Amino acid sequence: MGNGEYRLSVTSNDTGLDNAMTLSVSGDDALQSFMGYDASASSNGMEVSVAAQNAQLTVNNVAIENSSNTISDALENITLNLNDVTTGNQTLTITQDTSKAQTAIKDWMNAYNSLIDTFSSLTKYTAVDAGADSQSSSNGALLGDSTLRTIQTQLRSMLSNTVSSSNYKTLAQIGITTDPSDGKLELDADKLTAALKKDASGVGALIVGDGKKTGITTTIGSNLTSWLSTTGIIKAATDGVSKTLNKLTKDYNAASDRIDAQVARYKEQFTQLDVLMTSLNSTSSYLTQQFENNSNSK
Image 1 (spheres, one colour):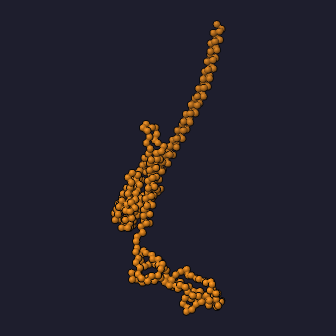
Image 2: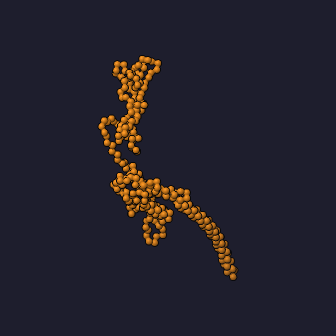
Image 3: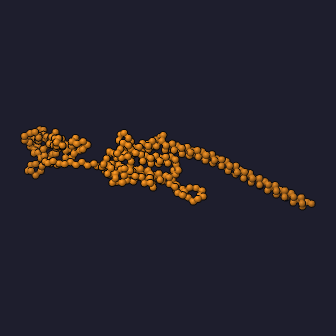
């Protein structure tokens, strides 16, 4: 500007021919001649640094032109981000990204193993000496609970189910096994990676389902929803415990009232016996005195 020491640069926010910039000044012809710009004009006050243009490429011998450098309709399910101009042929190698699937599977396994830890805590058993009057206070609150045993049994059964619509029938085929000592899931990461690279959709069908058959995690999720519903086995067990607690409370209160009544009765008896004893002592003293008086008068 002026002596050339300063420059004004204007950049469009959008790319492509349809977004070519136009600058115009109203009410000042001198400023218009200096700053005006129209890409279709033969001469302009301002010079263009980078002309607006569309991205052009050829994919599999098909010419494609787009106003954006992000091309999403050239290859199915593939987005191309064009970062540079090339004159020769370019080879595009597409590899499958299995990292998200592996992360999701690991997260599910961690959640399942956390549930197993909760089960272990709730069913913990500590042996006591023979002849002890009570169990250890460190035993789990649900030790021997039939509802929890049912849930554990059904979960183990669901993990071992086969999915007939998948190339992979069991979790072991994709590297997921159960530790027989604690029931937790273990992962062979290399085996899972190989399975995903070979047949990712088959792994998905086994884990989640394919629209025709439900996968293992979907089956577990459905059962969890059922167990936790207002008509599920956990609600039934909770209601049963609540009913038992209410009955025990009533029994306790009734027994407490009976005990209080008995204590009051015994206290009253003790008081009356004390009165009787005082009266008897008084009578005894009187009789003794009378006997002594009679003896002295002879």
